[in-house]
Length: 97
Image 1 (cartoon, one colour):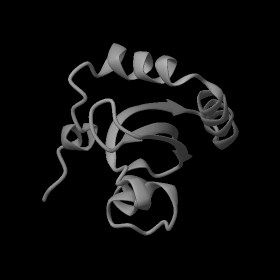
Image 2 (image 1 turned 90 degrees about the horizontal axis):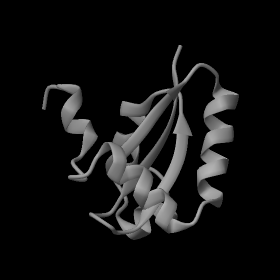
Image 3 (image 1 turned 180 degrees about the vertical axis):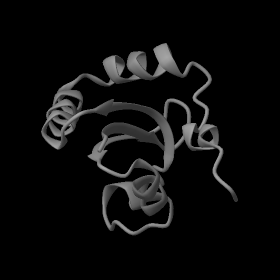
Image 4 (image 1 turned 180 degrees about the horizontal axis):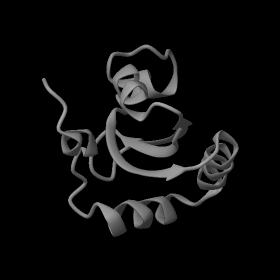
């Protein structure tokens, strides 16, 4: 089983949210559908702009906590390195609409 650390954004250089999960597609859909009251719903943060895979839930959680402590500039650099166009990575999974 894979575990993920991810960053979602409201738009390019917009509001960012970092999280971790064991089901990335389901979690991003939950963000998009507003299943979570609070920060992500309030700020419309639902574009998957970065993620990485981990072997354990603990490793994904530790990485989430690490990134949440980072300066915003470091998070933007992380995104820009792997996704300079800030495309919605959910579109790359080839899911049926």
